[in-house]
Image (cartoon, rainbow, N blue to C red; front, side):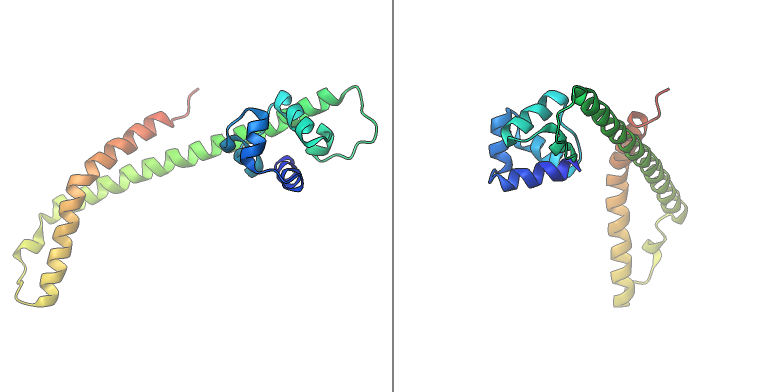
Length: 169
């Protein structure tokens, strides 16, 4: 809701992301991340946004508050904490998914290597006088050649990625 409100109010005021970023002393990408819901502004920045938009912080957060309360800062802080917890949970889930995808990539590369080793380049003994066999043999050889040269680099990168995304306790 905060992201949608920032975007809607910015557009209604006729400001571009760059113009808003300049007024808030941030980079345009920061405003973009706020509007996409990928991050949230801290409380000081939220107050600055409300001042630029000439609206209340409660309006930015989606509440229509007629009377300002003394506990506005506490309420804003609580909402930002909830949003930050949600963003942290998303990050944890993305990291876990990436971790398992990298492990899967390592397994797939290892299995393909094992299959290539077991087949011992059997296509080299094929009769290449038939055009279809020649094309298939060339394609298999090209795959094997590229795989043997590229897969170790990918395997090392995936191994490093697995190490970096492991669960830290």
